[in-house]
Length: 124
Image 1 (cartoon, one colour):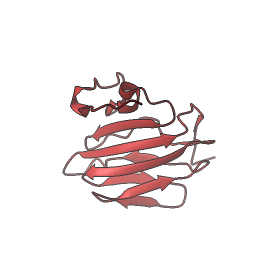
Image 2: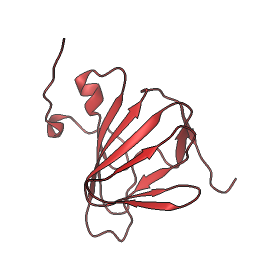
Image 3: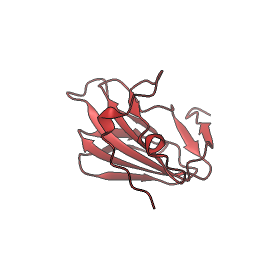
């Protein structure tokens, strides 16, 4: 058995990302789920541009603010204390609009933690 208490603020941000990403799952040694905490300022997007996954399911839980998620069919506004679930093969781009008045904090879970990401071009 193993247990971990982790203060997300103690996890160093992932370098070279368009927003602050803290790979909490890596810090905990998780092997079956990816777990990231994102702090997204106005005009920034969650890493990985418009994309989709072959097998990975994703869940975005908005801790503070309102997360916007662009999809081929519509743009979702996900308010604080709400979840957005993204099925495999479902293109999406999560961001905080340029005209937002505050940052957004989002906890993102992905399972399985595979690197099956593909760029999505909405114009093709």
